[in-house]
Length: 323
Ligand SMILES: Cc1ncc(COP(=O)(O)O)c(C=O)c1O
Image (cartoon, rainbow, N blue to C red; front, side):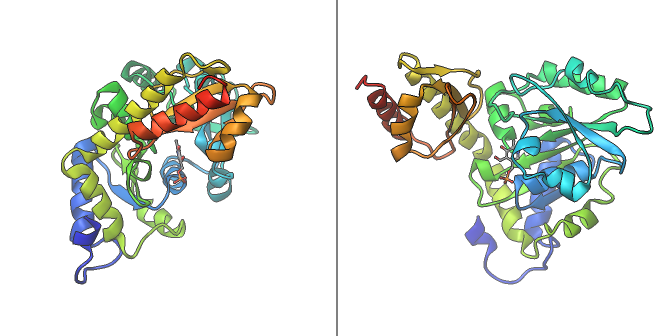
């Protein structure tokens, strides 16, 4: 699709047929009443999406483990100048009760006012909200006059896991991101505005955030490719299936204990240090957690094959002395 978008000239900055096509397809797929804005990274999508929802004195309630709180170098705080009101959430998921725990200071002019709840689907811990959980959060947000932002860098993986439509997931959000990069694209994300009246500032903020690509057609063409024949779903299903295969294969390995439900394309496992060190020599992965019981984060992707997983499993077994 990139090659198809390449020949000839077209109008820059998104006034081209590829952007028009991708935008209208995404609006239809999500049931969006507002616009769709392409950006280059998931971090930029989060900053733009949240920027549409926040007033200057408002903060964002989010899980302590969320990507925007932990892994974006404070981009939201720096660029938007807002406070993140983080809440510990052991499985990475917010509940109405957890959100409520950050609302005590409402109405106190000395305190940052919670204005937006930000959830990720799938979460940073590889878990997914059920539709019922998302809807309960949505209802709670409405009852509390809070807006809901959904970080969908891995939304396709969640839709594949739940077997639901993108519109069902998006229907719970005021604004969301839809990630393509983790699902096979070269660097393209979309900010989708679901509700009326929220996207007026988006073109200007995107430009100020340095995310208005002059060659927008190349971002848009990647969405056209992913949407053309359900490729976005097949890619996500493949990634999820490989994570499942990995988790199943780890089942009887001594010194490895999968510690989060495996729902998307991530496997989190407590791993003994003696096993982790030899593995790291040949494989690159992150780990966190208590130094005595590290938690490894093993990711699969749209292009992970069964053979890749089996090679890795063989390496884990060897490190565990079980080969
Ligand atoms: C849930 C989530 N949100 C946002 C991002 C940010 O994406 P990027 O690295 O493209 O800025 C990631 C990246 O891993 C992510 O997993």
